[in-house]
Image (cartoon, rainbow, N blue to C red):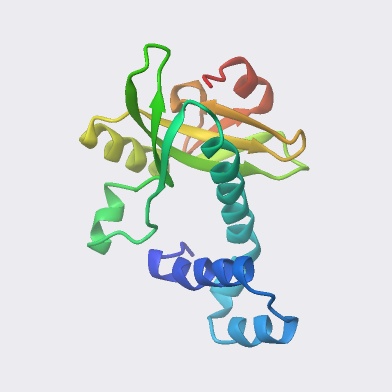
Length: 179
């Protein structure tokens, strides 16, 4: 079963709560008891993703060519728009070597330490690409490779295309890194 955007909100709120407050286990369990089993089964996966986004914010906002990093809201209305468009995680203003400030849309992905390949659903990639194209802003994936503690910046054209997925190996990501 696919999670709806409204399902993600309680997980995001719990992540933000944990980030800003010391949350005893019993309080966390009480909050989790108030969401559906389906959401509870996805909490760890989403928290890993939110942790990668937090790390991206810290690392990339400190780079001298990052003029602005603005997190975009997960919430997207109307709900039906998700079939055609997906808002990525961040909008950055990057300073080029010619000192020009250029916008860049970034979607952050984390690859668990035990894995060497990032997999993205084709429909998700198409929806975020459509969003970027409609705005006329370039789009990239910022991929955190947990096994190596390293980041790559990759465009979707370097992914291997499968029937319903796009796959990117760490080796391909490093060769095609555009950071």
